Image 1 (tube, helix red, strand yellow):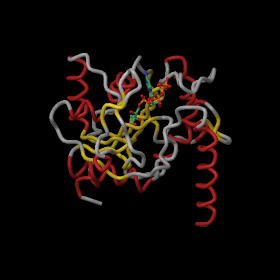
Image 2: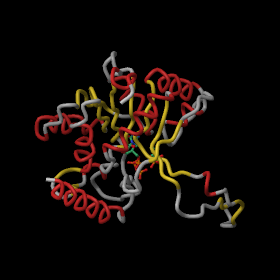
Image 3: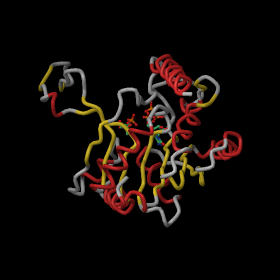
Length: 242
Ligand SMILES: Nc1ccn([C@@H]2O[C@H](COP(=O)(O)OP(=O)(O)OP(=O)(O)O)[C@@H](O)[C@H]2O)c(=O)n1
Ligand SMILES: C[C@](O)(CO)[C@H](O)COP(=O)(O)O
């Protein structure tokens, strides 16, 4: 591990204040059970055993703050030091989570509460790349040919596939850089779909660290059986290791 990374104090903002409209369930998708535990708890457990992480802030809907505070003792989520109420857009939830982290956290990762399969290897790759460059996101090269299509359903462009990556979380930044990007985005009334966009807009390069295709964001109902399969595979892998 690089020296800068070893001495840095890392915090994680796990955003989970969305409504999950594409999932279409009465209960927001982050609270659906994956085997025995809510999806969000599986996600939070990712960071529990990482010594590099000093603290986690989980951002949820105002109505869910108490329930999530109760999870800290129930599931032994000792790294979760705060539960914050989120905002109307993901970006606002990120901003509120950043404000809740303690003052001495100087590097941050933002992670979707509905990505429970980020591996420690991939998270560490993202942290290492950010420590070396200032800002990095996990991503995988796209496998399909991607087309741009107009409102009439007609293809207007085929971008070169070699340059296309599907972006995931965690996304890792020097805290002051992400804060500056989010402040500027708010001043410009710009709302991005990921955290890197706020930093890219400053003209600051954001690097990519190669992740895993299995780090899925649980978004639509067809993701649920695949998530069950991934959980079972991970547990089989763990049993084989012991
Ligand atoms: N105002 C919001 C919107 C989203 N998120 C979180 O951002 C992550 C990624 O967003 P997405 O998958 O789009 O979740 P939802 O916004 O809940 O889904 P949908 O767009 O289908 O409503 C999720 O963990 C979600 O809870 C958030 O914290 N605050
Ligand atoms: C941040 C993200 O998960 C990267 O893939 C994604 O952009 C979130 O987008 P969504 O519109 O909130 O699903």
